[in-house]
Image (cartoon, rainbow, N blue to C red):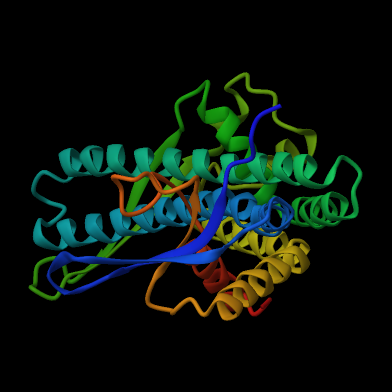
Length: 300
């Protein structure tokens, strides 16, 4: 039977000139308390990857929007009469890349969220059923969700049929050019590709113009991703609140200052060392990072 590792709570504090002040509690942190601690903060590490995937999706969408604005600026600097075809192709490559990045990260967010809930709470749990029911209702009511979700699968096997970057402009002969870029996709290329679209998506695609604007659908899909994160945070609210309360109580009880990095020191202090060699950082900063997301969604 292995000997239990000694555990003590303490903290590091950055001093001026790069020095680090170390404080270690004289009282041991019992194995029972350590088990309770690990159980309470477990939710922090369960939520972290979901929020990171959402942030990645949002950044990819923001980069797509930035690419569109950038293309508009380039057309303002260079009128459509001079090299417009070359510029259209060049900008099209960047925009298709951004669309693919967005589709991939959004798909990953949805898949990992579902798997995480099942792993953390169990298949058929109230948390899993609540989030999946909300997701299914949004999917049922939104052509944008149905189409863009399937477009991710389509893009893995076929080239996205972006028919054109549609440029709308006025005052092109003056310095006050008004340029707008829109992303149009070919309906017929989607339907005749050989890809197995879901019946509901195929029926709706047939109602679209031969070339239709993709931008509003991408925008609606991003809004849905936001709402799904909000729901994910909501179903995890109780456990996260317990984690916040536990860490707050721990810091207050041990009088750990706010401007420090709290840690658990593992093992005894060697005779030639000022502190134990191994530590485990208490995830206070990560907890605050997640709490900011709860506050933004008005769930906290």
